[in-house]
Image 1 (cartoon, helix red, strand yellow):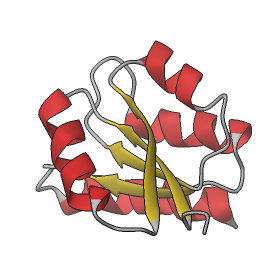
Image 2 (cartoon, rainbow, N blue to C red):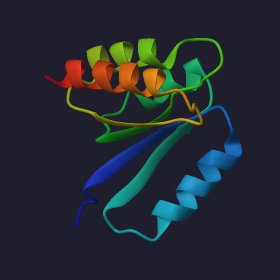
Image 3 (cartoon, helix red, strand yellow):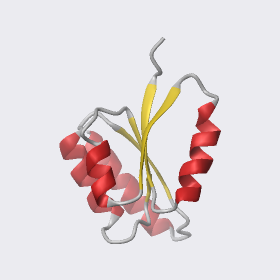
Length: 104
């Protein structure tokens, strides 16, 4: 049986990659397809079709909200699960609006 979700993890902290891989590793529904820490690694990961992108909203270098727009152009059908350590509701609201607008 093919996994339901082929997952790309995009976060600039390797510890997050390892934690998410361990968390999802025992689940048959998920296959970690790739972990990316940089723009270059994300571009390589997006060369393959994935079902789910787990995205940190606080990536160094480029606004993650801009990444959402870029990713949607490359893979319009990918689902995006964004997470963050931000405590400001406005940031989360803007992110969810970008993700929802990109999916409609």
